[in-house]
Image (cartoon, rainbow, N blue to C red; front, side, top):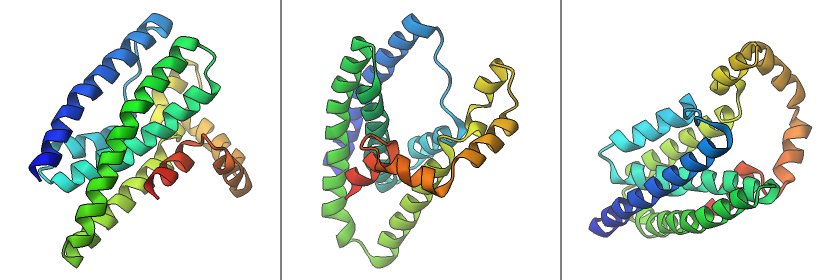
Length: 188
């Protein structure tokens, strides 16, 4: 779909603006930004390197943008720095358009695909969702942060697993700004 490819190319410019804005904000406040974690980094690399347009649209427009909306909503809700809150508000506006484009494309395209191609897209999207769900908050993804403060990431992982009971997870998912709750709501 040439229109979808053009939209994705234009989005690249907007994403570069977001990265520059967040990088400058973080540098001024705390110094050098930390690198993206391995789980998300691997997914982003797969999206960039894939020749499949559907993978870029479903992966970036729907899953990554939906996840970003959840993260930005949390920072917007709980942020105490007025500049950060404004940065989140402006970025969420762009991200909402990007995500909506992915949904429109998927609603118009995926139902018309052959069953095996549709199944491949759905299976891949489910795998990506699971990687994000089970890894983004994992201490293993933040080893460098724990090492910098003298904590063993495996010890932190054990404490994390002990504290994250099913009831705690359910309670967190009730929070309107929970990153995965927002992602799920954006996909419906």
